[in-house]
Length: 315
Image: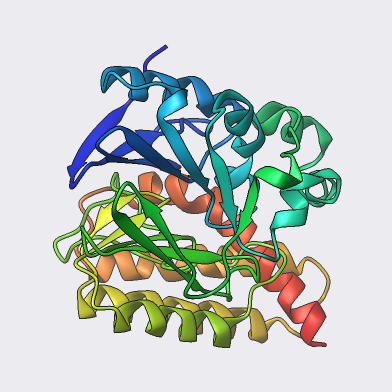
């Protein structure tokens, strides 16, 4: 098994979850002496990669003190139950609105099957293992935990999902942002730095709340953002503006189709792709439009479904 890792400094290691392919979902190991926090879990299929990454550091699952999914969407939390089963000394730290779903994942599974279909769900995630209630620690806004003297603070960041928090690590001046600070794939490069854009996947997208959550994160003046999708980026003012612009543009694209419920998802998807390809051209993209479209198309399908649900809910 080929486990892909990247040392980011400050005791933080990126482990590629290999969610279907490499470079899509990042799991972060934070080591403070002989204790470890795992931020994001990937899926059940990712657990062996976490084990290998720990072994490379002469550590094991017994060293894991905290397992911390930023929210309960299954590319972030699908492996939480299996990891908790393997890590006897760990506590699961989760948003209060997500805790019950990881204790009893039946509704979580049903909701994900509704998006992906039964066959794809089983292939991607397998069976979600529940977590015992007494091992779950709920982390509301401004909650803090101690990792062997290293403080982690949690910020409630709705907008992508109501059950979403972000994790601020004072030592690295970095924030683990889950999906709140959007997506940026390293395989797409430009003259003007990384492309970043919002993720509006079903079913709780709220543009106003998401913009407020981004403002909350930037007020902390972080030096680095640890994206789940994918890797570490520097949160320059230009990058933040690009992200916020995508939220507004995606919302406006959806609103253009508010009165056209038939085939609306496909129509929104194509306009999202068109918008991002235009942005990439303006940024001096180094790859072909065909390559970039292949990278972003699946995300734009999910984004379109989320925007479609947002329109239906608003109506």
